[in-house]
Length: 245
Image (cartoon, rainbow, N blue to C red; front, side, top):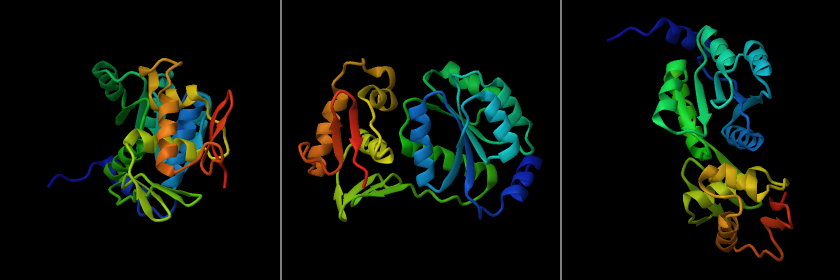
């Protein structure tokens, strides 16, 4: 049997056991993508910090010593990657990118990235990939329990289920992702363009009605009357908001 590497031994010494929240640094260009990732990780009992600039990211990395980094590959992240790899042990990193081609991914792996996820991303996939990366990096049985509970509604990403009052509501993956995006931002108006960019990326044009159609589907599944909404309200000329409870 092959002996553990020196880096893995150091990681075991540093991390065993996970009695404190797992610290994750987010360095993302899109504010909504950062909110999306932040909320998903928070639901999974991760502790996150968000850096607005590369300089902030390098400073937080040194001071806070996160267990993992999620960064935007489309930003100039060379300085941050150098700092990540210089840590002892190196901090595992996931890159998000608008470009999903093989050349971009291979270049990321060559630069030292551990995993690549194409934007727009499903929150459950980000959580699953991060959990798997942390398990590989630190040999720890990290739990995967992302659940939102709000207004009698339960969204369980790990089991891909949505329940109201204990009864399961069957939805497509895209409908669950839209519901999750709205619920995790309860009380905040999200524009159609923001929803489109976060969940559909560049696949659809800005004037597409795909968002409105999916919201109508969600309302039908949740028995939510748009005139007297319990969950999702339409904010004229602005977008949609999950009502704060």
